[in-house]
Image (spheres, rainbow, N blue to C red):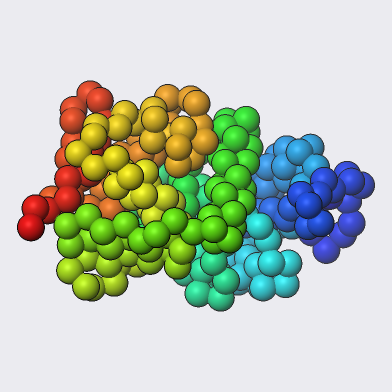
Length: 245
């Protein structure tokens, strides 16, 4: 169902007892409508907002399961919208931008976005990434019920039960995707993991075209944890290298 102060006609699909709700915050009507209809075709309920303040209000009102958020919005940009949404209630966010700049991507990830797509983009890929985010939320809920013990590697402690990370006793705030990526790398210390493997484990993708997403998230991890923990193996992937004590 697509709603924008009016009811749609597509019947929503449920996951368990909860209807999946997707909030689309996009000021370009043609893009917003195209995304909404494609998401509704998956059986999801879709809410639309056309500017920043409306997006924040819609997130509060509809408590979406995932947010698709344009960076360039009237009255309040997407970065501020993301900050406010995440401060109120953590929710997976895919950011959309017309600029293909790595700095923009890192800033978006830094304010709590889980993924980032550059316009023009494939609707098929957007749906695939949305599904991957939803599956990761389900996996996190299952882990919370039976969490593994905290992982200590050098001066890094990873607590999967509380999804908390610290280095040298100092808490490090990570986005959900950054946390999952760190867990994948740290679960096989000093082992080189290919970008394709990380895409499959963290994002549930099998399409190697998304490997740049891995690179950007690794850079975000290095900014937060320090540049010495993750080693780049050029042309292959990355390895977690805990400090020796």
